[in-house]
Image 1 (cartoon, helix red, strand yellow):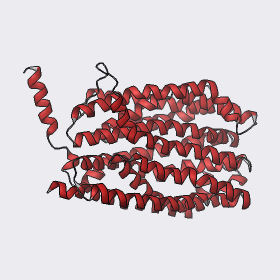
Image 2 (image 1 turned 180 degrees about the vertical axis):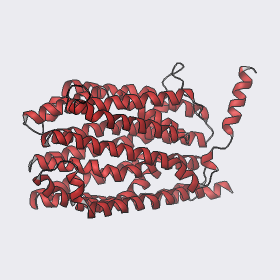
Image 3 (image 1 turned 90 degrees about the vertical axis):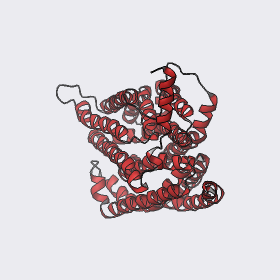
Image 4 (image 1 turned 60 degrees about the vertical axis):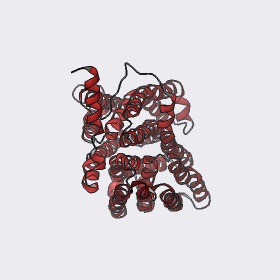
Length: 466
C-alpha cells in the first residue's frame, strides 16, 4: 500500500462517527466519567493521607504545608488550565472533522508543558524563602515551608506533562488510560509517604522533605506511564514532536479557553493566600484548619471534577457537531449527578465534623475552630455543583471567559472582602460564612450567562440541522 493510500485510508477511518456523537448519552457520560471520578477520588484520598502523615510530624509542619498549598494550587491551575484548553479545542475539532488541527493542538500541549515548568522552577529556586517568610517568622515553619516549596516547584515538569497527556487522551474519549495514570501515581505517593517521611525500611527520616520527594516521584511515575500510553496506542489524534512547528493561532485557540480556566484556578490560589494572611492573625491553628478543609473537601469535589472531565469532551464534540439534543441532555445529566454528589458531601460534613478533623491529629484549638468551620463552609457545596457544571459547559463550547467571570466573583471579588469584613467585625467564628455567601451570589451570574448563551448559540442548532 502506498503512503498516499495509507493516508487516505486513515482519513476515512477518522471520518467514521466518533462514539461521542452516537452512543446513548447516559451510557457515554458514565463510561467516560466513572474512570475519571474514581481516579480523582483516589487522588483526593492521597491528599488526605498525605496531610495525615504530615500532621503526625506536628502542627507546625501541617501549617507549613498549608502555607505552600497555594503554590501547588497554582501549578495545578496552569497545568489544568492549559489542559482544559487542549481538551476543548481537540474535541471541537474532532466534532468538526478537522483532524490536522486536532493533531496540532495535541502536539502544542506537550511543548507548552516545558514553558510552564520553567516559570515555577525559577520561582522555587529563588523565591521560596521570601514567600514563606511573608506569612510567618517561625523558624521551624519557614524551614519546613522552604524545603517543601522548592522541591514541588523545581520538579513540577512531571505534573505539567502528565496533565497535558491525560487531557489529550480524554479529548479523544479515552478515559481509562488517564485513570490508570492517576491511580498509579496516587498509589505510589501513598506508599512512599510514610517510608520517606518517617524513615521506614532503612530509608533516612526526611519528614517534610520526604513528603515532597514522594509527591514529585509519584508524578514522574504517572507522567512516564501516560507517555507510554500516548505513543504506543492509536487515537483519533497524533502527537508529532519531531515535525513540530509552533503555530501561534493554535496557541491562541488553546488559551482562548485555557487561559480563563487557568486564571479561574489561579484565583483559588490567590484566594487561599489572602485567607491565610487573614487567618494567621488569629493563629497557626486557624491556617491549619483551612488547609485541612481544602484536603477534606477535595474528596467531595474531586468526583465532580472527574465528572467534569468526562462531560467536557461530550459537550464540546456535540457543540461542534451542532447537536442540541445531545448537548443539553449531557448537560442536564451532569448537573443532576453533581448535585447528588454534593448533597452527600454536605450531609457528611454536617454530621461528622469532629471525626473528620481528628483524622489530622488535631489539637484542642484546631478542633474547636474546625468543627464549626466545616459545618458552615459545607453549605456552599450544592450551589458549587451547579456552578462547576455550568462552567464546564462554557469551557467546552469555547466561552472560557464566562467561567472566568464567575470564578472572579466566587474567589476574589466576593470571598476575600467578605472574609476580611467578617473577621474584622465578627471574628474568626464568622469568617467561614464567606464561602456559602460568595457561592450563592456567583450562582446567579452563572444562570444569567447560561440563559444568554443558550438563546444565542445553542437554541438555533435544530434549525441548522433541519
